[in-house]
Image (cartoon, rainbow, N blue to C red; front, side, top):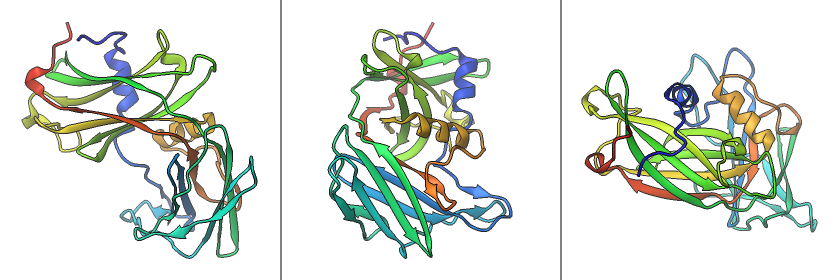
Length: 268
């Protein structure tokens, strides 16, 4: 099947140039800031606490476990204290209900941070497919993911991640301006056909499992990710004392495809 509504190659290059890694919280010579990465799903809440890392030092992802973390359902007033799990995350098996609003509160070393998020429901991933496109230097496998968008609302935002054999490979934020006939479409440049000329960050091999995950997010979260992709500070998502990070409440969906280069059709 050929790509429909293919994004021009120049746009693809620009859209993927800054979104190949996990979120890196590195900063110049300032005192370390608390970084809060909170995610609520229908099945659980997971919050990771770390500190920012100076630019001239390797990333330190050691999780902090000396805080008090709680989640409050603002619709019914229920508050739950999260406990530290075996991986160093603050977590609970109580998930979110679609349409409810939740407040995440973190208290640590005399500081207090709070963020509010609405719980979003899932989209449906309709297709995940590869096509080879001709570039001046080689053919490149382009991955396209299509998913449904809520026709009753405008300005819906999404965080789309691509995993390679379970490890993060690409990510990008998008919104429903890309939708055609009720479907949003996101396109990623991936590996060259000549894998010997590709670097480890981009290469895909025959048999690799590529997974697309889609999460609906708030406009504020969209702007936060957009800023991170541009290596700048995004809007503050937490009130109270100064910190970095995000809080999102969403129902993430996934769809996987096996990379089979000999079976991928050529576009044009």
